[in-house]
Length: 463
Image 1: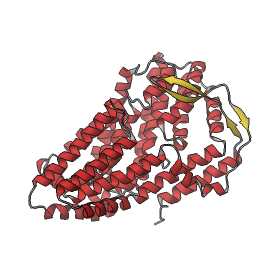
Image 2: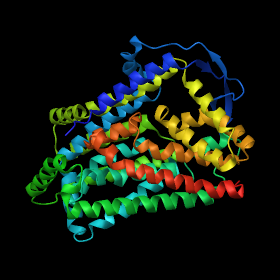
Image 3: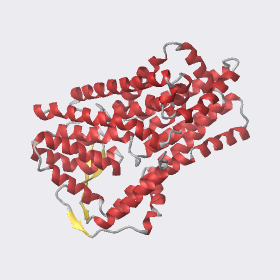
Image 4: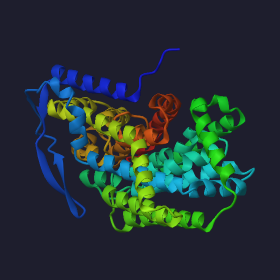
């Protein structure tokens, strides 16, 4: 059987491709202007300012791209977040509290394991739709992957419970301040307007995804070898079962550590929604949670430190791949061809009939998402272009925002340039190629859904 390349090989090949594009494509750039959105400002492109310039072909820079990827705005914080969260959850895991909690939950759900899937996925999808949960979903795989294995499912189901569900909510969001509200502000339409139809989009997307995962989970539970993770999950499942076999009772220390975990999760939700917390604050929250759990469990200072470092060591691969993936965007920007790609796609879109034009906008966002995984960054780059293009094409700006949302959100769950995606998979110990093969049919379903979702807005002139 042909061996599938490691995710690092795939990402470095994409870095090489990006370097080639800097030699093939002409350079170009838009002027940037500052606009006010809500209480803040954001730098956006001036849609009428594009001009061709000399490109800056990249060669030796392919070897420095990963380093600059780590230094790219926002990426450094994600890398540190992964280390701190990984170390903290490793401490929590070593307390035995998670294993004890899973044991109690498995007993409670005996014969009703399937209820975990719709309940947990609905909650995380709602988080994605309401406050844009994305990076915040990363740590939860360390809880729900072991739970899924203990319930007789596989690692993919565990990741689907949180990461996949949050991603679906993120794509079909009706409140998300990081994508929807920024995009509507840039398109000069009322923030959160059109929420009724978006609520339909979110509901349908969430229900279809839950059904998909439940069908898959039932097949895996009935015949475990049907899982692409079967062999890799064997050792992890045995480890979980061994941990549970060693537990003779649920102690007060276990309960206290789980209470700390629940408090940390509630604190995260409150901090994000009410206090505007993001990566730095959340990393600090989980770090504090890990230290407190270690102390409550009875660990001494040296043991706690060594356990935390061991957890960070396990996260090295996840942290490294985030920087490598960011290196792709670094090369395209340094080569002065990112705006050229954007301009070329926008020019084609403006020439098409209304419905076809909305589809072109959607696929434009799908394509650009590979190079610009950040939803807010992509909104700043594309919405100043898509808004006037929508006017020319006879499409409402509200529809253009929906096309942006759908094109941005769903593919985040599969592209190797997304630090959140590769970081989550590495943390869950799921090889990227296995996730890609499993998730690809679902992505085709999301494409079909997205095209259907765009029909009513175009036909009715949805405002």
